[in-house]
Image 1 (cartoon, protein in one colour):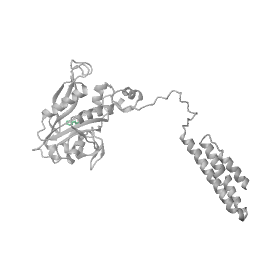
Image 2 (image 1 turned 60 degrees about the vertical axis):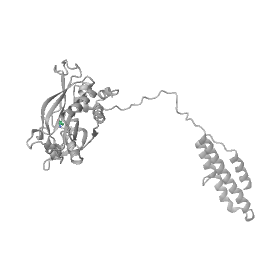
Image 3 (image 1 turned 135 degrees about the vertical axis):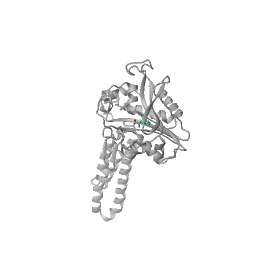
Image 4 (image 1 turned 180 degrees about the vertical axis):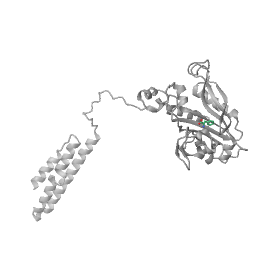
Length: 339
Ligand code: PHE
């Protein structure tokens, strides 16, 4: 037994390893349950009683030496740099396919950023709504045509549940939850029951805005919208407001911007008019403020709403609305560099 111990001791001192597998193989050979040292330990019970003490000490020393040597090999290996030679570092890299932002996301973000700089915060709300938030609180008469099956997707009658047809519903929620001053923009998807064509879709996206405070005037509205138009379409852009009608604003207006293509001279895009309609707006009807518990004698407000697709069309001249929702890679790739 003594010879065996001495022989193993010598072997262990000279051990070498090239990689992690070698080290593991050595550990198994010497230190595992079925390894050399364990089998010597098993023979230990046959050792004569008077030799037991010495043999025991030698065996323990052998085990300690083996453990120390293998740990040392491990440490040495880990501290060196190991290049995996199966990887060819000179090969050309594969191009990384980075996704692109959807044009509607780009334009929505641009709109929201402009209003954020003007002090508006962002409010979002549910696409599935009740009648009160989409129509009732906004002064729509019970027989208003927008409530009709023509425009609104009804999910349930009694109580009525609909897909929102504008994000004014979010403004109603904000008015119900916050006290003036209120200054928010509400971006989101809206639904209308229209036949799908190049010019209409059953869903599209809006950004609507609302500002309520003491002494808010139509002049404030006009100033903010002019600033928006200049930032969105360029510093030379002009705006004009035409009288219009919405149940929730009085007075109401529609806003045109000078044609982004011909700068007002008249071309095919603006159909010779020199102007392009981009949004609806007006002073919040006092009845709408009262419906949300805001005192209309103390506060006034303005609101506006625009379609993101419409703005994106003017910016990128997309002729067919359906392209926005078809996920055609060739179309989406065109916006790779757009900001
Ligand atoms: N909610 C209107 C729409 O969907 C837009 C609008 C908002 C008009 C605010 C005036 C004031 O068409």
